[in-house]
Length: 147
Image 1 (spheres, helix red, strand yellow):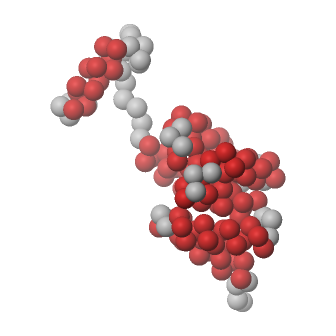
Image 2 (spheres, helix red, strand yellow; image 1 turned 90 degrees about the vertical axis):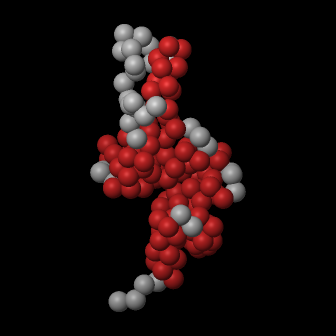
């Protein structure tokens, strides 16, 4: 059984994304979006335009539209989380990744969350995390590699 042109482009695009070659992925998914209106294509295309063209607001909307059409597909959450990371919106990205994990345990979402790491406890737990003393001593301890 041979793959259709769309399936070949999709697999090529996915492979490019996994290698971090967003330009090649953009070419594949841009063509796929023109050929077919599948939410998965739009979702990946959104991540590509956010990364390569900086079109974050359009990318966010495309991804949210894909999520409305297929709310249980964790890949849309993965791509929206990536878009937020490209924008430097780490907290929103983590929220979206966690929401995606509620639908399915997508290994790529888990991998993204592991890359982001976990926060250490504040130096003084009785003070708020944003307290200048906690921030200052936390930075010193991190620099000295004591934490």
